[in-house]
Image (cartoon, rainbow over all chains, first blue to last red; front, side, top):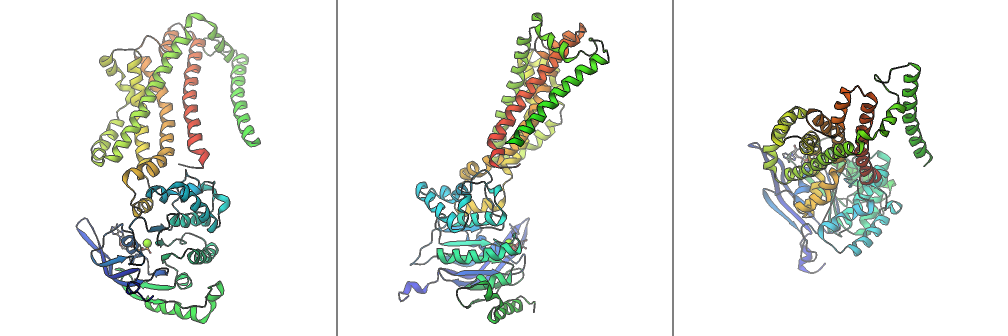
Length: 259
Length: 252
Ligand SMILES: Nc1ncnc2c1ncn2[C@@H]1O[C@H](COP(=O)(O)OP(=O)(O)OP(=O)(O)O)[C@@H](O)[C@H]1O
Ligand SMILES: [Mg+2]
């Protein structure tokens, strides 16, 4: 951590704005987002519906251009290759119905043209890591929603990208499964050491998972605040009842003007 | 497996039951053969060599399968073109939908003027009638991709061809098969109506000729053979659907 290069964060967003234009109209979806993210952090992005969270993720994924500000991903220590270094998880698992779970997980490797034998081996490890090893040769329709989402997390990791973007990945799951998936994601994140940007509506979820929480206000998304979350490690469900946890959630409610 | 066997057993029993009921109704009701022959009289008609069953069945089969095959090839190709060339889709899709409103069998007299009569114009009628459901459903299947799935592929810098081969094409299969099943039924009707209007062979032609002779058992047998051709076509499509779609747990 003494080299000058290390001073540069893995992701630097500075005054990032994005305006949608359609039918002669303009719609400012993201305005003036500024934030640094270090490599290996799990950053939770909270904000009200329609505030531009997905838009911000799409800008980071290179799917949309931003209009002003700078988006810099990667640094000298850890260079970033667009495409190659992005993994995405959505609210829906979006598995291809005609492919087995294993073949679904291999999709990014196929698209990127990675060597298949090695990728297959990696996919098998990942299937194990996300806890659905028995379903490698099953089709998605044979899996529950939670298991499908596990598969889609494995898919986002198969090409070993440096940045994983998750857009409300557990939003469609029932409350209990969602809690379980939170614990699983925590473990997967620690095992993989990836940088993860995690969009959620759940304030509890954000505090529980985030090593850092960024709060966006109602659209256009303006960065209300972002702060590190310091909770006792390892984080278990009992953390949620701690006083510190309560303080963090209160703080977020206040930032969203809901206190 | 037992439920699989039981399901098929019931289906077979229902078919046999239908034939038995038909025979009994005719025998007990003493219905004259020229009005409605029973299945036994109907099948006995097969033994009459002068009826040329093989030839007529072959001609009709040629028209049905030929027209259907061309419709599948042309329909799928056109749907794919529409997907790749949006301008073509914007121009031709509305035209196709309008043309779809033309009653296809009503075009048969024109086809006869243009192509004279025989196997080809009848094949063409079968083609025109079953081409539309195939092109329309296939196109819909190809374009119906979740936008976020596209985002996923694009975030990996996947190209158009990869999206097409890995997502659109396999994703369209359930749609293609549902279109093909609808088309299978239509193809049979198209070919036979074509034969009604003008031809010198085929089961539809045979049906009309025997009508003049009040040869009802031969007519019934022709009808059964036409139905058999339809079942063969539909069964083939359903079997392919089972292999490529159902077995993999894909629902349309
Ligand atoms: N492709 C687009 N064209 C035009 N406007 C868009 C487009 N995508 C999003 N918007 C608008 O931009 C705003 C932000 O959308 P975005 O999807 O980023 O919100 P979000 O924070 O992810 O919302 P949610 O929490 O409901 O998912 C919304 O008002 C939406 O209507
Ligand atoms: Mg969103």
